[in-house]
Structure formats: C-alpha cells, structure tokens
Image (cartoon, rainbow, N blue to C red):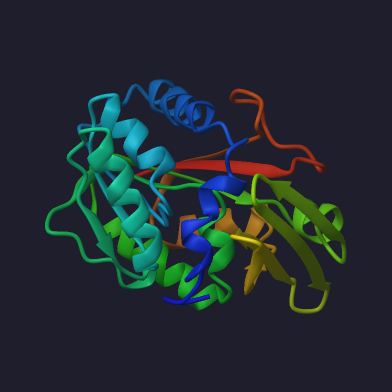
Length: 248
C-alpha cells in the first residue's frame, strides 16, 4: 500500500464506486451517533479516499477534516468539495502517525481503512494515535471487511467489471497463514481508439472481530460495540462487513 497506492487508480476510483451508497454509509454513522446520544461538531474522517463520506458529512453541517495517505485520492476529494462549495481541509497522513491541530469529537475510518493496515503493532499504534485526538466523551466509528468476506467471498477469485470506457479485471489471492489478501487489479481505460493499461496491487488483512475488540480495550476505549450492515444488529458469522463503535 503506502503513498503510491491508487496512484493512477485514484482518478478512476469513483467510476468503479458509483454503485456505493455513501448516503447509506453516512446514515449508518448518524444512527450510531444517535444510539450514544452524540452530535459531534468536529469530525476527522481517516482513510477518506476521494471524500465520499467526508463531503456528505460536511454537506450535512459537520466540521470535517479528511485524512488519507494518497495525495492523488485527496486531490480528487478536494475537487469534489470545491465543486460542491464545501470547505473541507484534506491532509495527507499515515493513520499510524496521525497528527491533528486539535482534538475532535468523533473519528471515522470507513470502507476498509483498517484492512489496509497489515501489522497488529501498526494497528495498535493507529488506535492509540486516534484515542489521543478524540475529546473526552467522543466516539470512534469504523468498519472492516470481515474475515469471512476476504477469505471466502473474495479469496482466490477472479472478477471483472465494466464501466463506460473502463474495464477492470480483479485477481485475488488469499494466504490463510498470514490472513493477507493480495488484490491484483488491471484496468483498461479507453483513450481515443486505444486502451491504456493500468496495473495496481493492494493488500488487505483479514482481521477477526475478537482481535479488534481486544486492541480497542488495550488502547483504553470504552463501550465497544460491533454491528452488521443491518441497522444496529450484531454481526453474524457470514457478515461481509462489520462496523465498530467505541467511546473515549
């Protein structure tokens, strides 16, 4: 992963994510806020990508900062904010080295942000940094693609997707011993009569729910909860995505 992740892909990312319902994601975040009786004024959205959730929260009246390791993704996010007339500061940082000017009421890390952290030590360091920057009484909300999804649904599968002027071939390889999923993406983008070929490799770690909860406990988080994609119901063995919330 690292700073070069999504280098060319950043500018094509939204074409492939057009079916993702960011409104639904943002509604989920607000549902969890309400469960805890929270209405945060300031929010940091980590691993924010092209700002799908960040800009929506800003449009709903929150003061949001977007943080991502990819300058290219942030460029796209800034452009989208500018076109919508939104004032959103976007900063390029590794989550494990998070440095904000001031603490915030809520921190978010949506759409697999923590799956891209491959070592437990780095994940713990990230959760520690985040804890440091959440105001007392504040909240952390994040999601992961589940072990079941990475190992069984995506693991060792080949997929293809075609959008207008774009095609994507997606080859996956899951290693049970390391619990790492290697995703090899090949994108063909139409340019005139020809196609430009773009190759991208990404790695994700299949974290288990118990590990995440243990790390949150170790870092001093309170009232830890996990949810499936359906409302606030607990996740099942075959949940593809698991949401977490924790208080500071």
